[in-house]
Length: 139
Figure: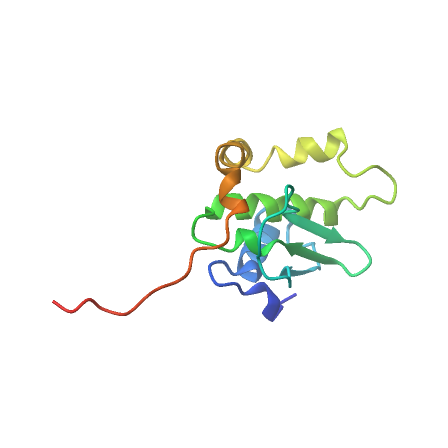
Protein backbone atom coordinates (compact mmCIF):
# COMPACT_ATOMS: atom_id res chain seq x y z
CA UNK A 1 0.00 0.00 0.00
CA UNK A 2 1.32 3.42 -0.91
CA UNK A 3 1.85 5.81 1.98
CA UNK A 4 3.18 9.38 1.89
CA UNK A 5 5.03 8.49 5.11
CA UNK A 6 7.15 6.07 3.07
CA UNK A 7 8.82 8.80 1.06
CA UNK A 8 11.94 9.92 2.86
CA UNK A 9 14.66 12.44 2.15
CA UNK A 10 16.99 9.77 0.74
CA UNK A 11 14.93 6.60 0.25
CA UNK A 12 11.41 5.88 -0.95
CA UNK A 13 10.23 2.93 1.13
CA UNK A 14 7.15 2.43 -1.02
CA UNK A 15 9.27 1.78 -4.12
CA UNK A 16 11.70 -0.44 -2.21
CA UNK A 17 8.80 -2.41 -0.73
CA UNK A 18 7.13 -2.89 -4.12
CA UNK A 19 10.36 -4.21 -5.63
CA UNK A 20 11.12 -6.60 -2.75
CA UNK A 21 7.50 -7.74 -2.60
CA UNK A 22 7.64 -8.59 -6.33
CA UNK A 23 11.05 -10.29 -6.22
CA UNK A 24 10.73 -12.34 -3.03
CA UNK A 25 7.06 -12.54 -2.06
CA UNK A 26 5.23 -12.73 -5.43
CA UNK A 27 3.28 -9.53 -4.55
CA UNK A 28 1.64 -11.42 -1.67
CA UNK A 29 2.35 -8.95 1.16
CA UNK A 30 -0.34 -6.35 1.75
CA UNK A 31 1.20 -4.01 4.31
CA UNK A 32 1.90 -0.31 4.71
CA UNK A 33 5.50 0.88 4.98
CA UNK A 34 6.59 4.12 6.59
CA UNK A 35 9.45 5.94 8.24
CA UNK A 36 9.27 6.48 12.00
CA UNK A 37 7.58 9.72 12.99
CA UNK A 38 10.11 10.73 15.62
CA UNK A 39 12.80 13.16 14.60
CA UNK A 40 16.35 11.91 14.95
CA UNK A 41 17.89 13.47 18.00
CA UNK A 42 20.68 12.42 20.29
CA UNK A 43 21.15 8.69 19.96
CA UNK A 44 20.40 6.27 22.72
CA UNK A 45 22.58 3.28 23.43
CA UNK A 46 20.37 1.06 21.33
CA UNK A 47 18.57 1.69 18.05
CA UNK A 48 15.47 -0.13 16.86
CA UNK A 49 15.95 -0.19 13.08
CA UNK A 50 12.55 -1.56 12.14
CA UNK A 51 9.31 -3.05 13.40
CA UNK A 52 6.35 -4.92 12.02
CA UNK A 53 2.97 -4.45 13.70
CA UNK A 54 0.72 -7.39 12.89
CA UNK A 55 -2.47 -5.69 14.13
CA UNK A 56 -2.09 -2.73 11.73
CA UNK A 57 -0.06 -4.56 9.06
CA UNK A 58 2.50 -1.76 9.17
CA UNK A 59 6.26 -1.87 8.73
CA UNK A 60 8.06 1.09 10.28
CA UNK A 61 11.75 1.79 9.68
CA UNK A 62 13.83 4.15 11.77
CA UNK A 63 14.44 7.57 10.23
CA UNK A 64 18.08 6.99 11.08
CA UNK A 65 18.25 4.77 8.00
CA UNK A 66 17.00 7.54 5.70
CA UNK A 67 20.31 9.26 5.06
CA UNK A 68 22.97 9.11 2.33
CA UNK A 69 25.54 7.63 4.74
CA UNK A 70 23.43 4.46 4.99
CA UNK A 71 23.72 2.34 1.83
CA UNK A 72 20.67 1.19 -0.08
CA UNK A 73 21.53 -2.50 0.39
CA UNK A 74 21.40 -2.04 4.17
CA UNK A 75 18.01 -0.29 4.09
CA UNK A 76 16.69 -3.04 1.83
CA UNK A 77 18.00 -5.72 4.16
CA UNK A 78 16.23 -4.17 7.16
CA UNK A 79 13.02 -3.80 5.13
CA UNK A 80 13.29 -7.41 3.91
CA UNK A 81 13.71 -8.58 7.53
CA UNK A 82 10.50 -6.79 8.54
CA UNK A 83 8.70 -8.14 5.48
CA UNK A 84 9.58 -11.65 6.67
CA UNK A 85 7.76 -10.87 9.91
CA UNK A 86 4.68 -10.05 7.81
CA UNK A 87 5.12 -13.26 5.80
CA UNK A 88 5.59 -15.39 8.92
CA UNK A 89 3.30 -13.93 11.59
CA UNK A 90 4.35 -14.90 15.07
CA UNK A 91 0.94 -16.24 16.04
CA UNK A 92 2.14 -19.85 16.00
CA UNK A 93 5.85 -19.48 16.60
CA UNK A 94 8.44 -17.21 18.18
CA UNK A 95 9.77 -14.24 16.23
CA UNK A 96 13.15 -15.40 14.94
CA UNK A 97 12.89 -19.12 14.41
CA UNK A 98 15.40 -21.23 12.52
CA UNK A 99 13.06 -21.10 9.51
CA UNK A 100 12.89 -17.30 9.73
CA UNK A 101 16.70 -17.02 9.88
CA UNK A 102 17.05 -19.42 6.95
CA UNK A 103 14.78 -17.23 4.81
CA UNK A 104 16.52 -14.06 6.00
CA UNK A 105 19.85 -15.45 4.81
CA UNK A 106 18.37 -15.93 1.34
CA UNK A 107 18.52 -12.19 0.75
CA UNK A 108 21.55 -11.60 -1.49
CA UNK A 109 22.92 -8.80 0.70
CA UNK A 110 22.51 -10.60 4.03
CA UNK A 111 26.25 -11.02 4.76
CA UNK A 112 27.18 -7.61 3.36
CA UNK A 113 24.46 -5.89 5.43
CA UNK A 114 25.58 -7.57 8.65
CA UNK A 115 29.19 -6.66 7.96
CA UNK A 116 28.24 -3.03 7.19
CA UNK A 117 26.24 -2.80 10.42
CA UNK A 118 29.11 -4.23 12.44
CA UNK A 119 31.68 -1.87 10.89
CA UNK A 120 29.46 1.26 10.66
CA UNK A 121 27.01 1.15 13.55
CA UNK A 122 28.37 4.53 14.71
CA UNK A 123 26.82 6.12 11.58
CA UNK A 124 23.38 5.27 12.97
CA UNK A 125 24.16 6.97 16.28
CA UNK A 126 25.09 10.28 14.62
CA UNK A 127 22.47 12.81 13.56
CA UNK A 128 21.88 12.84 9.80
CA UNK A 129 24.06 15.08 7.68
CA UNK A 130 22.52 18.37 6.68
CA UNK A 131 21.69 18.79 3.02
CA UNK A 132 23.56 21.99 2.20
CA UNK A 133 23.05 22.18 -1.53
CA UNK A 134 23.56 25.76 -2.67
CA UNK A 135 23.14 25.23 -6.39
CA UNK A 136 25.79 25.43 -9.10
CA UNK A 137 29.20 26.81 -8.17
CA UNK A 138 30.06 30.19 -9.63
CA UNK A 139 33.13 29.85 -11.79
